[in-house]
Length: 168
Length: 275
Image (cartoon, rainbow over all chains, first blue to last red; front, side):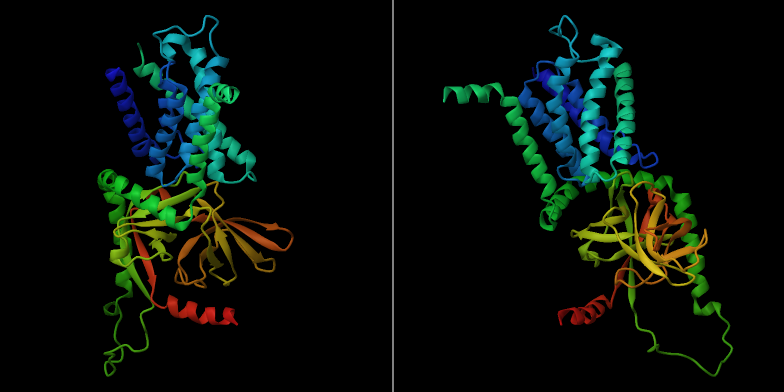
């Protein structure tokens, strides 16, 4: 239990640091900005209590907000994503359900499953985030294009990291 | 009662979601100045130490470019020195200049945090209240306008970048002084939009656009950019897209402009509005 806690705690810290010091400094034509930190919500085990999901989402978003001077922006998006997660898992569950002792990873459930899992959650996060950021619906298609392109980029990044580091 | 408890238990996830999301949205919309400054100061103490470290590295990597810019500016300033001019009338010497009164004072500062990838971009400077920086001052570089100071703490200043949808500046065409409001379109970090230019004005691609000096924030004739494209909106005005002269992803050292006469000007202009 303690080991599990330490492991997720370290992942939390590491993802926030990578986001703030590396990824937030990258920009591609003003359209694209990968938000890797939300991978933390994707990594959490199946048995995570639902209330904990929401609380973790809140603190994860808020810690990014602290560094980017955007109070409430990332936290609102990340809570929404945490809220979507149980429904997404139910929607794409394999016929036999999820086995005990496994984690939601590419290694256990395969590429197709993971791609759908990541796409749904990343999209729900980016949709909320970019529309809050734009603060209006007047540039709907422009903002929507940013959502779609950034979703593709973030998902690509998450899947690459799954391939490289989560082999077992 | 029992039914109510059952409903609460059954939908606890949705209810909890609504509660936490409300708190978060509350934080989001309560962005009046006081709370924003509070959040800013808190996140400042947290972030500034880290950013200073990472910035030291970035600074080292860009030394060559910084050197070149400093050389350029030095040359420009040397050209303005009195010793660069030949004194033709030796019988006449000026000892005390009473014709010119200091209007603008400049404070140099270093950028320690900067964003260009959002709709509302900000920069953080390493100087604040103690060094004389106040909200509302303009921020420029040798290449042009950067933004205006939005908030200050004791040792840091938060600057509203030109690449922020809240930023406005009064700009004009350098060659014929027709002016209009300039703002960022939010799409491309290299361009901005100048509107309300009358239709009888002749505009050409490549024309220089500078600050008008009508507000108390920026001096006159600070470079903003060059005309890239222009079109007619609503049949009565030109809208001009300009290529910004500053590269916002490369900002390192900036100059904060203090207008020593801004209070005097505002007071005078305020008198009219009171009547």
